[in-house]
Image 1 (cartoon, protein in one colour):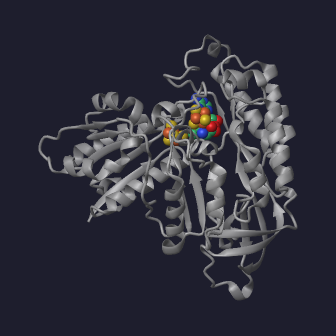
Image 2 (image 1 turned 120 degrees about the vertical axis):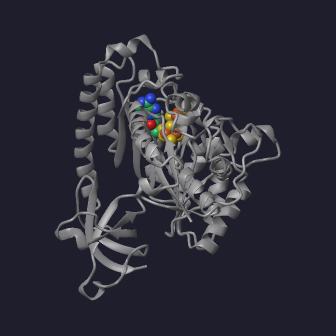
Image 3 (image 1 turned 90 degrees about the vertical axis):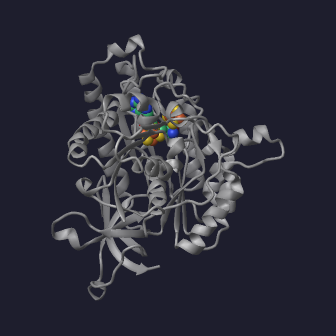
Length: 459
Ligand code: SAM
Ligand code: SF4
Ligand code: F3S
């Protein structure tokens, strides 16, 4: 057995890509280790979305140099989004890296590792950031290495939206969807043979699943809702989530399905980015604040239990104080269940990278805006989450409370609406192992970040 130390940065697509690489490496006798000093392969799966993500990786790759000096046989490989756009430069700047490859080449990980490990004396470096240019996109079977009942399933890759601030279209290439029946068969297999209960469908813009393929093949009528309808029918599948969706592409058909479905989660992540129409236009998002609010209204009508979360960027080049205020007001209006919020980070190669207006907002001002917005959102959350008190939630338990205090014996898990729920077992269930069980919990208290409740029953 050989050992791999894997460090993953970035989004769920990257987390899942890492899982797929580990599964492939297992086939050539690699097992995971948390100790990099004992690893035969140190693998970084990188993210380039913001400068902060880049900086984290660059500090780690610097530290690895000492390890390579001590143990020259260790293979150092860098995959993911930084490698796609900066891979050649990486190999020049950091001679201790053996392999650099982009996300479209992760399935070649075993080939690349084997090629390098056969040349222990003077290694040829491997660099592959080619994009897969075939017209179809197929992943026969979703692979994973964990033993729990949740699985990510990629349904499409790439992104064609070119939001002005975003590097993803350059790191992940053109949008392509898997054939619908391939995904359906894949999920059936996961449920029937691998004990999977909950599936998270992945793509940068899942709402446009199959759209490009439909244009090219007039006989095809596959779209995201037809995929969801087919998945809904898989017996044994308990919960279905998806991410990310683009507000421009949320169809009325999809909204209706949120009302009809028995398996779609009571949660939807719908990134809005800004509450100002001027900024949305500059970001090339293709919708207005009014359109977004209309979607929220229809979605809540279709499924009143639905909780919505979002992404916000503050300090986009030229964002005035007034435009920023519009985003704050918008958050008050929407009462999101939670948000991921970021200060705009200029990404080389994107349209917004070198805009002259970017100098108009200092780094300190961006941080100030972000901090204030986050405080406001926390108080919104504290309020909206109190409404959960008294409700009975179905929760998939993922372990014990991580805190090291009197509450540490509590179990925790996620409700269908994605909120974290803690509960104490009854006296007679103290020794029962709740991990990966579905339970019902009656919520008794709630903070901005989590809730507590009384255990009702295993379901
Ligand atoms: N495809 C998804 C979408 O359109 O919402 C997710 C894209 S990205 C992986 C996740 C989030 O990162 C975006 O929604 C955006 O808020 C943020 N983001 C992307 N580029 C950024 C940048 N240059 N600066 C700050 N935040 C950024
Ligand atoms: Fe980036 Fe926009 Fe594509 Fe999302 S939709 S990945 S923000 S370009
Ligand atoms: Fe980062 Fe690439 Fe995901 S840039 S957010 S790892 S698509």
